[in-house]
Image: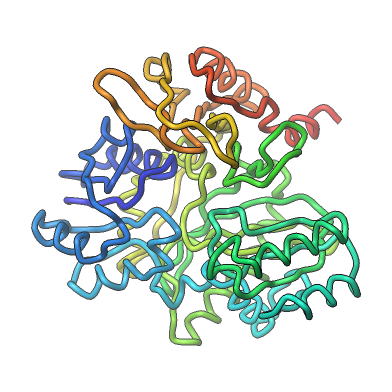
Length: 424
């Protein structure tokens, strides 16, 4: 098969690496890709937001299958446009992708299907939103309704934080995504990510993961797109997984089908494990980043086979085989991220570290001759396998320390929750 993968981040490098191992693959293109994807595929200088250019490339290169990585292209309906020219595409329809593109859409589905989630209210104007949080008090959660690059959520521990977050949204900090605001109750518990493939009717649970959103050690600092992750999540017991599939995933799939917008793609459920059981925090309509990096390190099955079955409604009977070891990834980011940072700084020593148990996935990188340059906020994902979280962590940080990049930084405590649990 000739396959086109859309995206340029660490998620896409991990997906490209896994797809490249498929015996069904003839040729893999990545648009636009990065310095890492160039090692396992052919990068293509396409703007993923230019749907016409993407479709022209699909036709001219006789592409058999398109895989969409980033949320922006999923929510913009690129998959619909690809399917309209008769090519199968992994990624939900624009209507189904509202599960990620609109938090109020997902909340309404939860109400309709009885899916456990945080109590909430939505607002289209600043004054009533401010009045509501003053009535409710803190802690409380403020969310821009639309996509905001993982930065549109504020877990406000004080009323002042909540008010500032509301003002930011309505002042345009997140553009059109903040024109409507969802305010949720603060849930106590531990967060976990669950990934499930859905072909519109059938579903196949993949694996669990936990990520680290805050920029600095001890879960301090601003929210980011994710500074590290590990899989599986030890806190997610078989009983909790069963409850999640029964109480959250199954009614979501049936509810979407009943609305005439069946969900086909990967359903990424962000959950809070509360005293009352798992509750849905939010859905993403694509693979996570950096969770994909740890999932792909553990996946032993043919990724291309699974994605194609999902996209063509033939998931029934498929299974996914996993490496029982723990995978842990540490994100190296440009100093200053998630705020402003320098671009074009050189990275040395990152490209000779790969082994069977360790991969350095690229995100914001590009090649300048022999030099590897950082051009993004999150730049590298150092991903290791180990027999335990501790071993995977130790192996990952040993590789992090071997990379010469003075302009980069990472957290030093990825996996701390799981490690603390084993030592308790």
